[in-house]
Image 1 (tube, rainbow, N blue to C red):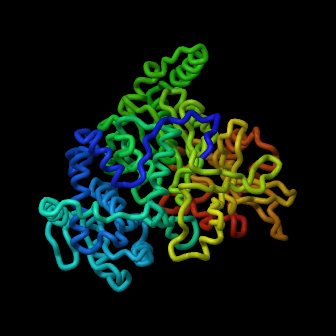
Image 2 (cartoon, rainbow, N blue to C red):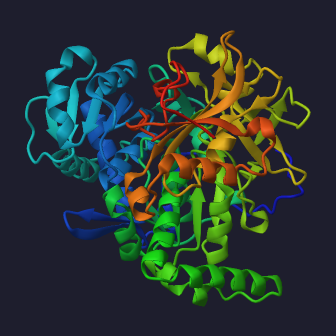
Image 3 (cartoon, one colour):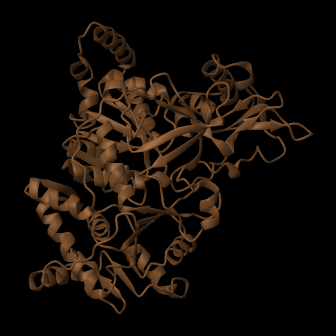
Length: 575
């Protein structure tokens, strides 16, 4: 846990249990609003004291049901009830199993069964499938529907369960407090989506989760009000979003629907948000699209140039120059934290120019998930920032450019894969070092740069190593390119001799930008964005898809869905 001289560490009062996390928030800011959330079309709120009491009540009810120490699954949309269940389980000695609500039934039933869950909480839409497939989830004895008002056999009403819990707490308080876990035991079992094969259960301890929250805040702070957007079944939002907000005593506003993000930014007026690059891209394109539609594209470019020039002499006019953009984000947005996939550096530069900086970070579920993040004192979106103080990040077998596999050892590294010691042994060494499968390097300031995934590495016949993600990043900047996949083109002997780009175009943008000959336009624009790359990283052939890529539930392209990387070449255009 040596301090990095290049990092400005903030003082954080560390917590060592979820009970301590909740109790401290109640004691220090009990009357402050912890959550704002939708009930129908109305917005309601709950204070930290009210939330603490709600967690204790649900804990009492679960204890009486005999499930407080069980594996407890949850499948459904983000909600106040979801957060209540999540913190209740973490504060007890059970294991919380968040299930990806976008999975098809056969896959989410597999996750529930494999996780050994004995009770499942769910949104209304999942109840029928869970009821009808009891034979596939034989250990489940109760289903709790968040929308039910009455019990029906083994399917219970969440509302009634909670009311009963409050009654139990009045009669005999402290049922949840009596259940104490070893902080190094399993607390959260998260199934990774992956781009190939069935999901693996990542085992995370309470120490893993709280270390991530506490040490993360040492590097990158947050502010008073956040808008919670990303799904809670991902550790990104579940840990760096929910747990960090409680630790910092923020008010967390719960977005009700991804289609309503822009509306809810204006409604809740948050100071900070956590997003994935797809959202940053959407915001970026929306800003430029609106500027062009209103005839203000030239003025926006001029304002950015002028503002950047003024900042070099110590004058910051971003709040006034870009007031309309700030108001579109609610008027108070001070920071956007971005992770989950590579971020184009141009986006970081743009948002910094308009006064809403993006702080890029790197995480992986197996590391709870945060490994590194940028901070305001040295923000550089071409990197993923500085490693947390509780981990040791090393680069294994670096090449001449310093690129090698990123390895992590420390307090946030997982316990292993659930019931899969064979898979655990492949990535987690006896000394606790985790091999991420990601390649990267450090710059001279000690900031980490991500190069690409080890399994995606392209090795050309001339010996050059190429990470497709780097080039995909450049091509994604072409406005009418919706999705892109770069791969190695093989000769008759199976050697990768050149690069191909498989592209799915945005029909909306093609029309908006009046692109009449997409193949010719792509050839020109790809040459333009790749002009600074060495010749061996240039695209030789372009393949335009007529159907979208198949994706994971985290919106990542499944490379196995490529039409051209694993098939005879057709519909090609020379780049």
